[in-house]
Image 1 (cartoon, rainbow, N blue to C red):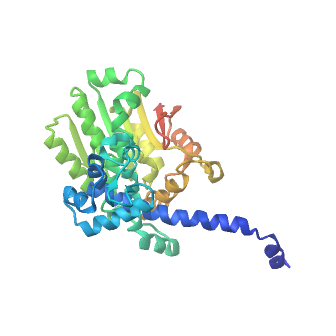
Image 2: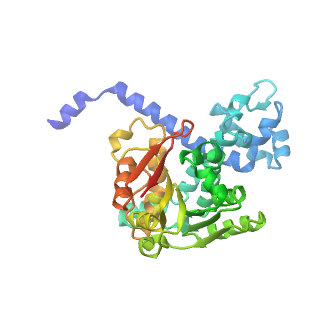
Image 3: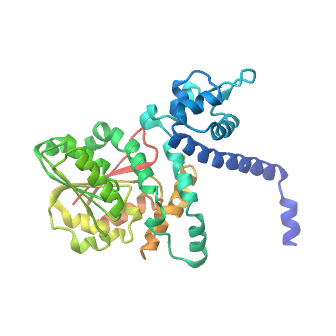
Length: 363
């Protein structure tokens, strides 16, 4: 009877609409892979500078093999990204599209984010095994993740650091100019700390991260820029609540890092311990709710849950951690900050940033 009822309620129009949507999803998933390739090979940047051109001209200018470029152009044309003249067979990237896909677009370059799809696809076998056996996929299984994160951070943080982010804390720029102690927990490749160290030579900056490879990259960049006021240390902060220096730093930051930690509450307690009484903790984390149903209208909901499942959550679980995931939400974020001992928590959002919340936190 239940089966007959189900068949009677079956809506063919709804089924057809879902099939159409899923065909679009398949095409869009493939498009992300090809956009990632186009970004990494510089093809979008080349197309931006060329008049309508043949595949041979495009490949030659980019220094690439034409056969691959032609197939890539096929994907771009059928996706509506690149235009082709049916008579001349000349390809062109419209200026309106280049505004969102090239390095010249700076913070608006969405091609950077398409790289996550390829990176996450590389660990699919490990993720499937985790679904079946539990556990997690460790950091060292993501060889390009730090590179992509650094590029992402360059767009979402560095591009607006001076204009929008530092001003969230009144008087901070003046204090940095005069000279204070700054710590970044989960610094990755250290681009933000190195940038701040160059801007504020009277302040001292420290970046810590679990990845020795990322720390090595950060140190090399600091050496290349001849920065004397920044240091980077590879350290596991799972016990940061007991190992953090007491009341030492005036300003502590985390950029999209807490939810990845094995023991996020311990890290937050360590930040509370390390922060001076008059200090400020600036926390960037994903904007969303702790309840799935509240995220149904989130413009990046599916993308963020996917990144969470295939990276943020699983790398935490691989360390025997909580596996909070990127979409742990503002409600749980505030709960953890309060449990860590913080009493003043302000949530800020930037008009150009649909992905993040910015928390200004004090003791």
